[in-house]
Length: 291
Image (cartoon, rainbow, N blue to C red; front, side, top):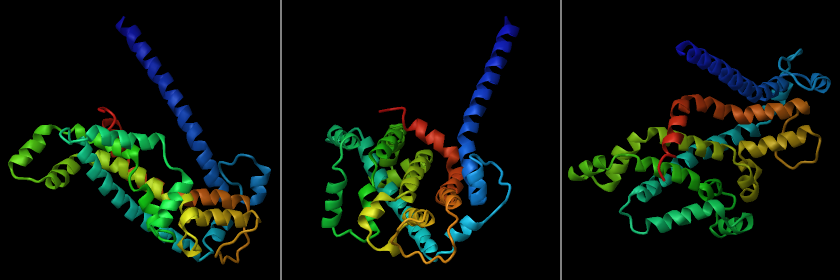
């Protein structure tokens, strides 16, 4: 019986490993195709439907993308918006999540209901635009940050994580004369680094991928983030009419530039993720245990 169970266990592990490897392969292959397609020629892309290793290597797509001087300005805008937005969002989300995690907070249930309500219903694009306009945020970088400064989902995850911290630690800190802010910044946040890293990654990805907000609130092309500029590059490479400040004199390589755009837009987040990977799964799971 022991040998049968051992054989069954090994068989299950082998089948499980094979299925997971197949799923991973299906997930990774499209991205490999995009990367390979960005380094090949239009002729090869037209001749082959799926490319994993280019026959002829070419940097024309990246040469076209980086030939415009506006790319580095747009990259700076996106990096600055992502850093400032993530820091501000984490500060506001942490403050609100800590308050809602306190069981002695008056009106806590009402506030939580309002937070959850925003996950199901929102004002929509036009009311949000009118609010941003009345606040004088049009053509300002604040319009890319403030409307999405606190995400209800991230707030709930962080609040649930804070609730898992033993109450005895806070009580001991209060006995030692620590204030509420001192408890939050000296005890709660240092113990919540997995959740902080996870939520920070969520916010960073959101700000880095900012597109619609920039289209709605920014009328000046020199203020565009990288996502909007890359879209203009794709339009230019497709031979369509466009209106932008692109000053590239390099002829667009059409299909391969679209794949190169995906690589340029995705690479920064891919470089950041490995440093947060060890905290990512733990933070997401622990934050979802208690309600």
